[in-house]
Each structure stands twice: as structure tokens, then as C-alpha cells.
Image (cartoon, rainbow, N blue to C red; front, side, top):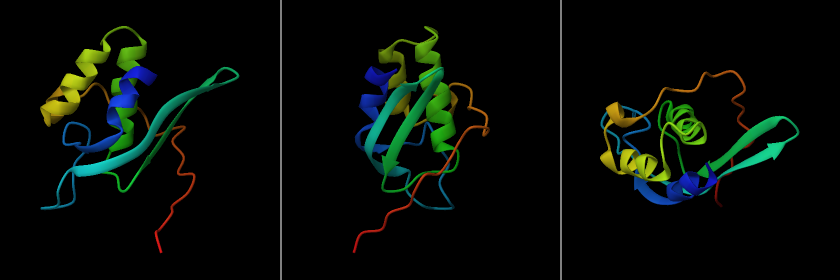
Length: 106
């Protein structure tokens, strides 16, 4: 899952993974995207300049498909570059999703 998540880092059109507010671009910059194991939990960390509606939940659901072996890393990358919501896997449920912090540049 970390191999797939690494492809999120950088400036991409995330239309596959989220819906923008009306008329706004789906291009975002992701700075960090990785999974860490903490006891029996898998924790996904993602940091970006902004997020689309349901972007994180859709990314997590798609990365889960990689972890379960339903998708390979190449399938995930193909979905990312498709810029089409129909390529995304099932959206992860909102339970367990936490906003840790918001940072603004000076």
C-alpha cells in the first residue's frame, strides 16, 4: 500500500478520488502519503495543500484494494491518472477518519 501511496506525492489531478466545489480545479499537491502500523491498527497519513470532497476516503478505499490484493500498484496508478470517479474503488467509511491539524503558510 505504501508503494501505491507514494504515487500520490506531487501535483496531480485527483478527479478520480474527489469532487471539487463548483467550478474549481481538481488539481492538488500532496506532500506526504504513507501507511504506518501501530499495534493492530493501520494508520494512513496524508498531507496536501488542499483536499477535494471525499478525496481522502476514496484514496483510502482504493489503497485498501491494493492491500487486499484486488488491485496491484499499477491499477492504482492507472486509476489516479484516469481522472474519472468511476475508476475509484469503494469509498472508505468515515469512522476512524481524523483531521489532525491544519497549517497555513505565513
